[in-house]
Image (tube, rainbow, N blue to C red):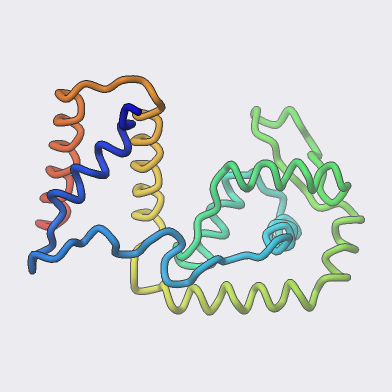
Length: 188
């Protein structure tokens, strides 16, 4: 089986990733960070409804609001938020007051959504407390902007390695760009 681009890049990284003390630095801050899983099944829907109850929002605004609330400890992907919004709309908890508004879907809370939030207020309060604790724990670590940039980089690498062959020259160039970015970050 031919190794994929991502596997080849991973192998290259592990052969060459050494920190300032010679240790392998590749396992710092793994998926999800030290906070573990942020939301259990259904929790995210309550948080989304809460944010929409504050004011009508677009999907991107919800992602940003969650990210800001936990100081970057968790950043939901569009692949998580948009299906959740579709489900909440199908359940009648949110609606689009003006679906033609600038091409983006703006979601507002319905009366049924408000009742659902009221019925689940205790669970929502516990979630908000947990999010506030995550914010305090993560406040002095990595900013949400840096986390978003890191996620964008990971996505670009995944898309580049979507199964299409990549030459050794392309691989070397990508590694060179990443190494150069690392040097610039260390110098800043």
